[in-house]
Amino acid sequence: MRNRPAFDLKWFMVIYNLGLVALSLYMFLEVLLSVWDAEYDLLCSVYNKNSWTNPKELRVANVLWWYFFSKAIEFMDTVLMVLRKKNEQITFLHVFHHASMLNIWWWTLMFIPGGMSWFGSCMNCLVHVVMYSYYGLSALPSLKGKLWWKRYITRFQLLQFCVTFTHTVNSIRIGCEFPRWGQNLLSSYMVFMLFLFGNFYINAYIKRRSHRLKNGGAKAKDICSSSSVANGNAKTSQASNLHRTKVE
Image (cartoon, rainbow, N blue to C red; front, side, top):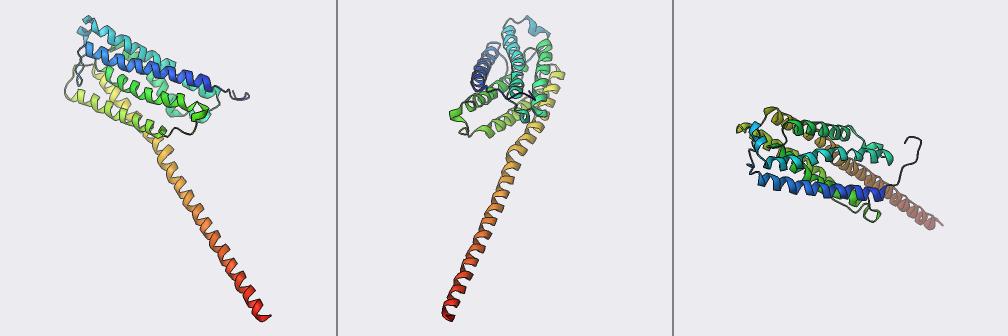
């Protein structure tokens, strides 16, 4: 795309993002329903060799497969950034997050497609309903610049990581029967995501707002100084004119 003009994909962006909203909403609801049907415990969803003999586990595994497959679909996010020449959006955070999620969920589907695996995917689906709704709506020209809740998406993501980390660590604390490597992987990944997304939030919102306020204060000071100088010059000019009049 270096020597080509950017593509105008606004209507494809609307369809693509709202399609992911529908898929994420379906997965969120189906995870909850399949977990309820499998009679999982909220704090400790057991998964062991005996889980394979439970036919209700297949429903959980099926929706987790769709969740894994959605991670492949989301690679289109990066393709759209390239085609629209939004290279500033292709950050380390973006590339690492998308690539690592597909990798991690391949391992999850191969070895632990059930049990505690449902919680993080369910939370992430809920976040994606909100996130892709924003992306889809923001692609509409009539709504551009009118959506005020972008920063709250990142806050929602940070909350997701905190809740998932707490839930996973608690399952380790109470000795939940689930492969320990899976618990360690998820809790470690949540810490890493908190660091990366937290760093993004600080730079994108807190530091940028502070910089904007600082520049705004400096501009206001310059305006006041200019105004004072102008007023002073005006008074000097008036005094000079008055003196000239008296002399004459």
